[in-house]
Every structure is written in structure tokens, then in C-alpha cells.
Image (cartoon, rainbow, N blue to C red; front, top):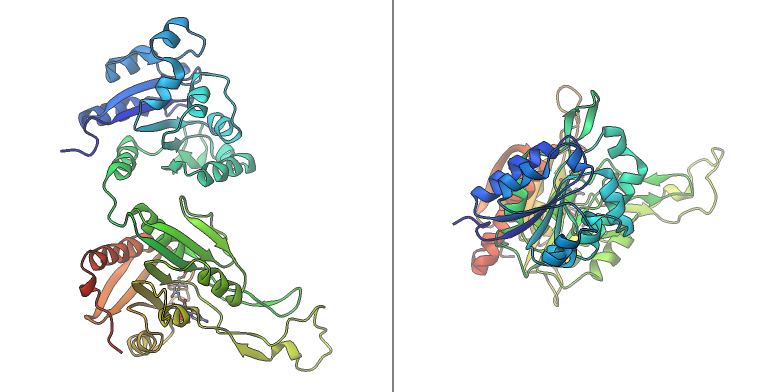
Length: 413
Ligand code: PMT
């Protein structure tokens, strides 16, 4: 039976040409057994009619806040409370702004403000509007509140421009809705993930850093959250948005990363995907180092704490599964096996970093990764895949290991 069978979905259709796609979404939802009630905003009604929406939902379409019959029959409070999930498709820039700032001047915004239900938005707008600082900051506010999001997608827009702003296809939105209702394999488990580089300051201007973008670590945090885990992400300086639904702690240095990890324990799962600097300058200089000094003192280095090893060797509060990474430029398997043993982790994902034959970086900053997975069960080669898919493969492994704890394939040391 479909996970959507007998679920009550409140669909809010706001203004945008993508409103026509929401008709197909209603059809798909009903096909899966969901009951769909719809609110059509004044903007939405410029593109589709209440009659076409009602023909597909089989129910009245609500459009007015100040309608006496609607308020006595249903009312915006009941509309918002009698659903299992509120889906906004398309979600216009205007409606997102109203939600972010708590405005309530029409039926849709009032219903949303009166709601205590989970909300999924499918944004759709012109690329400039999507990229505008105001929309992006509204999105951050909504994400921090735990609002779920699907899309937008890149492509050609009805206005003739090209970029990010197309509403996701109805089937993709349906999949996100189904994902929300599916039982979550890691629900009840907690996870801590490190991601991105660390920057070790030499002076107020310079630092010791590396090329990690945080894409792999962030994808893992997202996949764990999707699987129902409660996730803390400790991340170094990256140019990525905070993943949805994840508690994020931002740090600069390895010492700060260790502190943030220690204070997030205990957890069930620890994954060290960050590229932590092995060393830091002995002392950060208060002023910019002058060119005249021969070998600056600040270039003398001291070893940083090993975060992975510290967590993996905890006597108290050791996570049930500790996963490390190894970034190697040569002898991948040999070096990774040594790290697995030395750092006392249960599993290790080894990846090769550095330029390929064409001079393009293989892993840092790339959308894809190729991994050698090591556990007590031996090595497994995971083919080059999107970092998101590598993350999902890892989450699958975690799910089955936690379901049968004596099979986690931990190295005996
Ligand atoms: O961020 P991306 O651009 O997406 O790139 C992904 C990645 C290449 C950064 C990622 O896949 C990866 O390999 N991360 C680990 C990078 C690294 O620092 O590897 P390492 O071999 O130097 O360290 C081994 C392990 O010890 C890692 O789990 C690392 O997080 C951990 N470590 C290292 C040093 C230290 N002081 N503390 C640590 O916890």
C-alpha cells in the first residue's frame, strides 16, 4: 500500500506559471490514495482556476480569507490543522517572504501562520528573484525553522531567462512527499559529522588551509537527516548553505572543531569527513608578518589534535560506529588501511585527491567521488558516483549495521 494512502495534504498554490504543474501533482497524489484540499492564492488564480483545481481534488477550492461561508464551513484554522502535511507548489518569492516574516494578509499566509504542521515548499520564480539576497535570506530563515524544500531546478524559464528557478517536476515533488511519510531507518539515532577544511591562522591576513569544499561531508549530513537521524554537522569554512534540518556548528580551526565535536557527544554515529589540518602555526602573530623577516617564526608548526582518533578511542561515550576518511595522493589502499588501524575507526572511506591526467582535481570540490570502502569485511570499491549517492550508500551501510550491531564489521585491534 502507498505511504500516501489516506494522508491529508493541504496544497497551497501560489502565483506563478508553474501553477499549471500543480494540477498534475494533485492527480499523482490522489492516485496514491491521498486526500487533497487546495488553497489557491489570488496570484495562483491568474494562472489556473478554482474549477480546474476542484475538478481534480474533488473538493472545494479555498481562495478567500474574508468569505463568510468558507470561514463557517471550514475556517483557516481547521484548514491548517486538519492536514498531515502542507505542500506549497509553486511557492512564490512573495509567499516565501510572507512566511519568513510572519505576514498574514490573505488565506494562504494566514493558514500558514496558524499552522503547527510540517511544510514542504517547491519554489518557482525567475532566476534573479531566486538569487536575490532577500529571497536567499528568507530561505535560510525558513530552513532554520525546519521547513522542507524540493527544488528549484535549473533550466529555461517561461520568461525567456535561463538559471535556477524552475519548479521541480510533479513526480519529483511527489517523491519528496513520499520520502517525508516513509518510515525512517535511522530515526532515534544521533549522528555527528565533520566537514570542510580547517583554517589555521598565521597572522590576521594568512592561514594554513586546504582545498576541501565540504560537499562530501555536507551530503553525508543531509543523507543522515533524510534517513531520520538527529544530526550535528561541525564544519570548517565552506561556501555551502547549512543542510536542512541539521544542527550546524561553524568553526575555523582544528582545535575549535575538536571542542565542538567533544561537546556534541554522546552520539551513535561519528563520521569524520573534514580535511583537518595536521598542523598549526606555533603561534598566531598579532600583526601581519613582514616580508623582511627571513623565516617567519609563525611558519614553525605544531601538531593539531587528531579529532577522529580522539573520538574513536574514547573509553566513555564512544559512538557505536566511527567512520573515518583518508585523502591520499598515492598508495591509496596501503595508506588507508594504516589509517583505519591507527585511528581505531570501524570503517574508512578512502579517496584519491589531486589532479587527474587532464589536470582537473579528482575529489576536492568535485560533484563526484570514487571511494574504497574499508571494514573488517575487507575492501569494497564504490564506483565513481555523485557525492550525494556516496552519502546514501554509506547511510545504507550504517542502517544495516545498526539493525544488527554485531555485524558492523569493526576491525579488531
Ligand atoms: O570537501 P570535498 O571538496 O567534498 O572533498 C571531500 C574530501 C576529499 C575532503 C573527503 O572525501 C575526505 O577525504 N575527507 C578527509 C580528508 C583528510 O583530511 O584526510 P586525512 O587522510 O588527512 O585524514 C584521515 C582522517 O582523519 C579523516 O577522517 C580526517 O577527518 C581525520 N583527521 C585528520 C587530522 C586531524 N587532525 N583530525 C582528524 O580528525
